[in-house]
Image 1 (tube, helix red, strand yellow):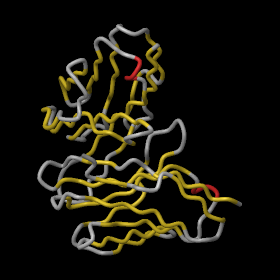
Image 2 (cartoon, chains in turn green, blue):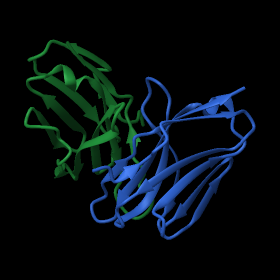
Image 3 (cartoon, chains in turn green, red):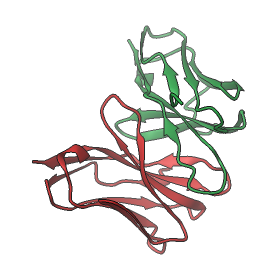
Length: 115
Length: 112
């Protein structure tokens, strides 16, 4: 398996533009997480899906952020309109929720820069 | 409200010595605790975990200790190697939701 795949790896956009980040989880995994890494807060959980259903989106900063998981093999995180303070590295992770440790596997991240 | 806290942003140790990274949590509903390592420009990778019903788990040079009464866990690396230099994240899994919550991270530097 290729692991969790995120695209693009880097995104530079102008303030006010729409940004869409994409994630393909590991095949067979039933949980998917979107995180944002910042210096102040470390890895901040934005939203968590289980079996394609959003379970907890309390970490989504504001209405400009939205996430979808139309099927078990694809998820998107959209920011519209984007602002300079959204600049960060965004990670997607997937796991198999069940008995046991259930560690999550991360993608390589998308570095977003909003100018 | 940070449920998982790593209060030391950075740690520097000499090669061959012990590295001790600390983590505190507030939620009693966590059933697993995990440590991840992250190199620059890469995603975090799983290192070691511990169930809430245990107090110690060892894997080679890495040992995680859990003190439930103090809501505290630590990662010990012995002996430390320069290749261990990375950012280490502590994480906790909620038993009822499966949600994985991370701390702020600690940057470890192991000097040759």
